Length: 79
Image (cartoon, rainbow, N blue to C red; front, side, top):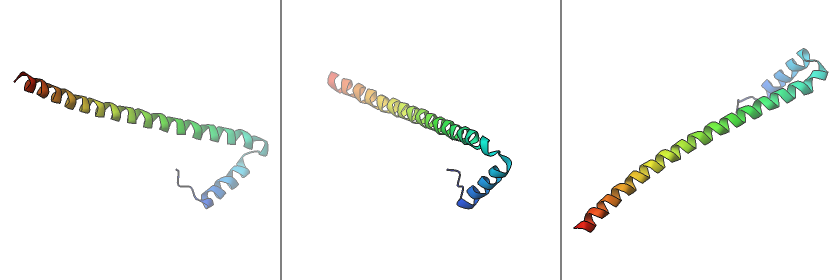
């Protein structure tokens, strides 16, 4: 997702151990996990919204085609 390799992860871990107190590490881990969970939910919501709009447009397009065919059939029936 963020294209973080093992070396970057190791560097982040070392820096966090230097600057964060050991008793605060669980708090920061919870915050980071919640942050990524919210981002995942936002991305999921945006994807769902996009798909809904896409299907709605596809439905409108198909509905226009069906109405057009229906008109043509009515014209043929009158003849």
